[in-house]
Amino acid sequence: MKKVILYIHGKGGSYLEAERYKKNCLGFDIIGIDYNVYLPWIVQNQIKTVYDKAHERYDYVYVIANSIGAYFTMHTLQNCDIERALFISPILDMERLILDMMSWANVTEKELYEKKEISTDFGETLSWKYLCYVRENPISWNVPTEILYAGNDNLTSRQTVDRFVNNHNSNLTVMENGEHWFHTEEQLAFLDNWMKKAVFKKNEDGVKDTD
Image (cartoon, rainbow, N blue to C red):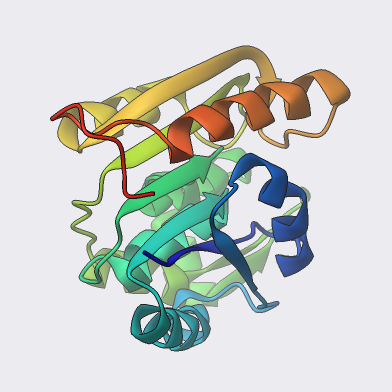
């Protein structure tokens, strides 16, 4: 059985990051999806094109997604045939994140509606179009999902993660002293160990995923 992992990177990341995960996922081909525009209505086309080709060539398609890549994954592939998803520091509730960023910038919905786009001191541009798109395109995610969350994540709250886990077919692993960006030697070692276990985790019926 041929198995592939699609890797969807986070903002500022690269599809080449998929290379470092190969050692954790022996027996899988890994394809990093290259994109550099962080708008769901654009990224979805790039992700879906790669998925469609992979679905034709492989018996099983898995996904590893980082940060906003998790949101793009759920948005694009929610109705596709995905065996399992592994999310690293995922953005699980995009509307909540946008509203949080508006609060950090002291921007009201009325102001954003009137100005359409507002730049912030923390480097993000708030967009009324983006907020409306997220609200108009709700996500229904039913893929078995393993989540790696950092206790010091500054973008997704623990409450948001716990709510997602309680409402979806997902398991949560927390690195309490981790950060949203897993980058230190200790954090990367934790991530690698988690990934090796998560990608080969047994199904609920006790039968290991296809070899």
